[in-house]
Image (cartoon, rainbow, N blue to C red):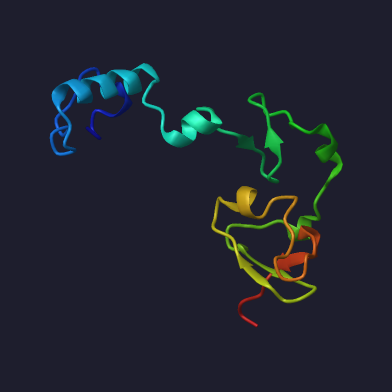
Length: 131
């Protein structure tokens, strides 16, 4: 089933294991294949994925900002993360955030606030782990 993926054109084996009869399995298959084999998440939120720029701002398919007012929100270059600078520390309370590489747009975006003290993202600086 997994190897056929979204390109399945006929009912695959495995329906018996689920305790289904062939008629019920065929009915379910036809219903789901008619919808394009969408996951529950895709069906609920839409099959298209939201795009983000390097600063975590939402962009349209043409890479234009969804909210043009955010274009004026320039970040300090000292605050940007490099591949080795994925550890950020709040300068207000010392909270340390370990940001997974490539996931900063989601978890450390422009609207991020410190979970400990509520400080804005601008109060976070790359942490020096050697100190």
